[in-house]
Image (tube, rainbow, N blue to C red; front, side, top):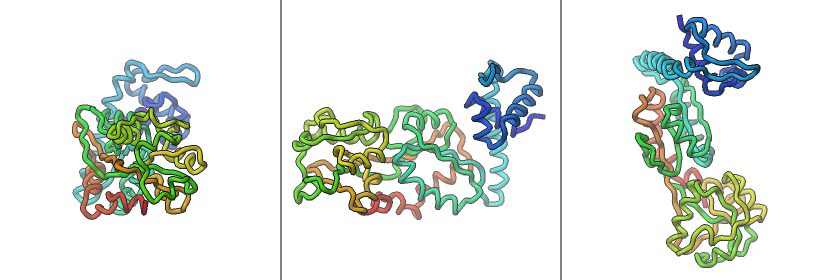
Length: 312
């Protein structure tokens, strides 16, 4: 008889095509992974992987087994959840994906409350680039995501979760940090800037705000491009340039007196963080509970940027 644990090991191995990484993810030894895969192959009478030294690759049979294995494991989870729901409990796995800012500054408080309410839910949250997050949601590999830009991916449901403000940050000893009057947009090109990649939610929001003042990102002299907002914040503190970042990222340094947020005349930049799911993929009891929990009135304080970011 097929073993659900063997099917779960197979699915991880199919994703990684590496038995050592599979062992690390599922918390067993590599020989145990090999043994479970071999047992599954013997029961099915086919080779699921081609083995060449330390490398493995899915066979045609292995590729064909993936959707069936997912279906069986999902049905088993649904059965457990259905029985638990009869007793008024929420159990099972909750797989979240999010972008860096959302993952580090928005989800932790919400997840802490959710885990307190539903301690039997096993939550995994991957912080990944937005395109990867959207891909995992579209494929059904993740239940719920949090991202800041609407992607034209058919079938995904986007629901606004919270609004964040994008601010211009500068070192506290910069002349703009102590000005009593806001900086004028036409003054912006006189400084050097540190930026995120063009496709980030912050970059998109800044580009749109600049356009209202007949400016473009190319008009702002570039000091460097960095891959995440935390690195940008630190670079600004070191005096390497100014930057537009989420105030969620800047708030702690601002409160500590290490950074200043500089008002710019006529540029109130905001971005919306969306909670995302795929209605075409059946939700689990845990994912449905988390979605309702996130938008519950009793957690409205966590959807308030001021509460999350502090004084800016």
